[in-house]
Every structure is written in C-alpha cells, then in structure tokens.
Amino acid sequence: MKAGKLIDIRGRQLGGETPLICSPLVAKSGERLLAEAAFVAAKSPDLIEWRVDYFEDIADTSAVLESARALRRLLGEMPLIFTRRSTREGGEIIAIDDEAVARLYGAVAAARLVDFVDFEMSNDPGLVARVVADAHRHGARVILSYHNFNATPGLQFMVQRFLEAERLGADVAKLAVMPLDRSDVLTLLAATAQAEDQAQIPLVGMAMGPLGAVTRMIGGAFGSAMSFAVGESSSAPGQMPIADLKAVYEIIRRSRGGR
Image (cartoon, rainbow, N blue to C red; front, side):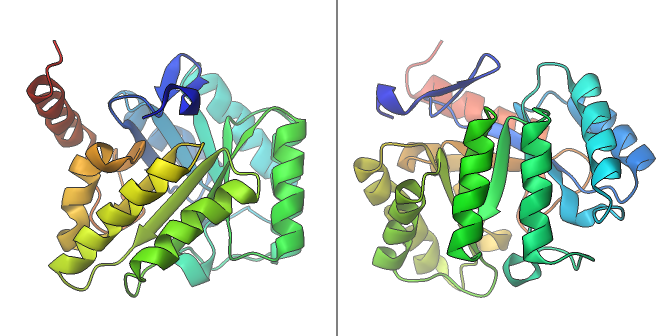
C-alpha cells in the first residue's frame, strides 16, 4: 500500500500492511441489535458494519438514529460502517425507496454517529453525489461499492469500477463478486491488484462463496484493505469466523517478516 492511501480511523489504519477485519450486524430490532453488537464486539474485530436493510424500523428515521446512538455508546472507539444493501446487490427488501434511503444516510451522517457510510455505485448518480457530499460535510467517510451475486465481470470492468468509485468521491472503493470457477477468483485478485496500482484510495476486493473464500484470507497481498468476517451472523456467502481470519492474518504477517 502507498503511504498516502492510509486512512486513520479511531487509531486503526485502513490501507496498512494487514487488512482490517469488519464484522456485520444483521439484527431486525433495536434490542436485538445491541445484543448482537455486544457479542460481536467481544470478538474484537477492527470495525463493525450495521446492515440497516435488515432493521425492521428502517422507515422510522428517529428509531434508526436512536439505535445508532446506542450502538455508538456500546462500541466506544470501534469504528462503525452504516450500510443499506439494495436487493439488486444482495440486500433485504425494505419499506422505503432510494430517495428516502439517501435522506436517511444524510440524517445519520449529520448526527455524526458513524465513521463510514457504504452506498452502491448503481444508485442514481444524483443520489450518489448527495450521499457523498452529505457524508463529507459531516466528517464521515464514504465507501462506494459494487456487488454482483451472479457472476464475476471481466477484468477491465472491475478495474474501472474501482477507479470510478474514486472519481465519484469515494474514500474507499469496494467490489464483491461471485466466482463461477477458479479462474474468476484469479480475475478478481488481478483486478484488485491492477486497480490498486492506479488508485489513490484504499480498495476492498473479494470473491464470495466457497470458491472465493480464499480471497478473504489473501486479498491483502493483492491490495485489498479490508475483509468481512462472521461475529454472530454472516451478511454474505463465504464469510468465515473472526478468530479464523485473525489466525490467517497472523500467519501471513509472520511469513512476510513481521514480528
């Protein structure tokens, strides 16, 4: 990683030698969310992602903000990512439209309760620009993401999606794709490496499912700055337990000359 790409977030460095480990929260209620967060935080991931598309009160902004405040108190200095994943990119069906989602992102950013917001590049360009501007105005960083649960696009398509996220104002670019064979896994890793050579922001690249699980372990060697691991429940196929991923990272760190 180039030194200029490092993002210091509550004392953790995104874009450093070892990828950060993020664990998702997928609870449906505020009460269950806090219980899940306490359980996951005890396993000491580097970051927590709140997948708010699972939250049954997503249409109630005040309820979302109340739960976000409670999460912030519980997590202390552990960084928090706020994510609504759309159904077209593997998320849950929700009761509000994309315009309302953008307003919700703005409200959460304005409350300064999260460190990152994750928004999909497939959204309307005007909404993408608004979410980026709102987040940056209030001190939050932006992950612009692309997910394909059906296949792995071509190498150049993925490289360009990484670079497009940067052009649109992202602080971090994320791609997750579904490999159909072993060569797709290699294509994802190659795309991450090629884009990382060109981009000025940290990248997150992974292949999903059993075939892609290896990318969650070795992605850092190809330029991926973060991986997702299970604390209590997974949010995508191929995620492994936090402790297992930590053990792999320690082995890789030692093999590369770390102490």
